Amino acid sequence: MAKLEQRIAQGRGDEIADKVLRGGRVFDVVTGDLIDGDVAICGEVIVGIGAEYEAREVIDVSGKILVPGFIDTHLHIESSLVTPYEFDRCVAPRGVTTAICDPHEIANVIGLAGIRYFQEASQHTVMDIKVQLSSCVPSSHMETAGATLLAKDIAEVMGHPSNIGLAEFMNYPGVIFRDQGCMDKLRLFEGAHIDGHCPQLSGKDLNAYISAGIRTEHEATTAEEAREKLRKGMRVLIREGSVSKDLIALQPVLTDVTSAYMCLCTDDRNPLDIGEHGHLDYMIRTLIARGTSPLAAYRAASLSAAEAFGLKDRGQIAPGKRADIVAIDSLEGCHAALVLCAGVVVGDAAFAARRVIAPVGRNSVKAPKVGAETFRHGGNNPETPVIGIIEGKIITEYLREDIPSTDGDKRPDPARDLIRIAVVERHGINGNTATGFVKGFGLKAGAIASTVCHDHHNIAAVGVDYDDMALASNRLGEIEGGFVVVRDGKVLAELPLPVAGLMSLESFEHVRDRLVELREAARSLGVTLEEPFLQLAFLALPVIPALKITDRGMVDVHKFELIS
Image (cartoon, rainbow, N blue to C red; front, top):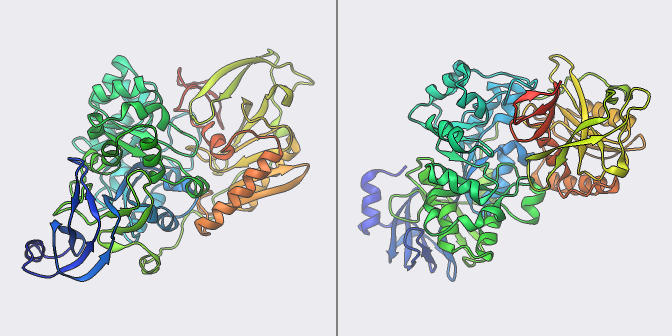
């Protein structure tokens, strides 16, 4: 950072500024004003606005509106299916200058080595990646993950410059019933930032959860839920991911009044969605198109996000703030023509200058080889629990369907959209397998399988043909994890994700193109979901209501117990 005296001198005009943005208007996210004049930058800090400055480098932004860089307040970079470097290259040009990530996907596979990988990578990206420390590895006692992190383990990676707190505390029953392991982790971060995760929690249980010192939360799916959390002092993060789409439901809550306490996040968003729609820029466009004021939308995307997470050095184009600036076509359009991260112009030169560290988590798929018989589902009672998909949500319905047993097996029934779902433990720990039923895929033939399976990241498979399910599952072991679509004994499409079975070593463009092929292959099986792969992944997350499945069996999330 430039010296204190130098910043003051350049701000006053006593010295020539390092860089000036000229010809644009600054959108102030406090007052809503549009401010004419230059933006002067010294090193990585803004030192002047609303005046004329001389500079060593002048960048012409005539006709553009300048807004603060966008802050994604909660996401898992692993869900973009690319490394932090490719994520950087994918979203920074869209105006995202800060990403507050939770690497609990990779931590569930390889433990602290995964967190350390993200911490080190964060020091070399163009955008600023803040690495929260994963609180729930595994997310519950009802699954087999590749690692377990206790408070003493988390303490080992505290103090890194990328860290600003404890990541989403998913085990909300553990908080409200004072589980000792949960208490140890919360005490470790007492007085610091603790991110929340408490879907549908309300009343006294919500009071208890917030009393633990948890201040931000991204799981609200209705306006009523968001309002209760706001009234009780939580900052609500509006989420719009590839599966979890809460933007429309929460948009009416975001006003000029509430925007000081609301932020934007993507949680889990893949390169196909980013390519077709956008990232936070898409959220801003959509909010404004639906009637949200530009002040509320841009404030939530920047200043409110910075304030919520204690990032006092950013969030506004103002003297003394980090030079995270986006030059856009219009407030309604939100199409970035120029992006600066800490005063560095985002582009090929900046990306080429990064130091890239070696990936981790190779050869992490150690699943047993399975056959068709693995996917049989016994039981004499016809009444059967069925996971009911709600498209665009990661919450599910707890359905009950009569499914008769034939020769000791309750077979999939595509005519009723009752499809086999299975989870196969892949960390080489116990070889568990569990089977059940799901409704909502529309699958008529073949099988789909994935090692992206929140949060334990075992193999999840759905299908109507057991041989195809076995082929898909076994193929994942051969390609080090990823996505596979199979029909009639043939692999139709696949995407290898060799970094912990979660991330590709290829470019985000390559991943985007393979996702197009996978989506078309899934549709050829009859799948009607827009995003079947991440939708599948969340069917195995036992901390999101109402019915889920892990390698240990079907889970009644409201009771927080396995179904016998």
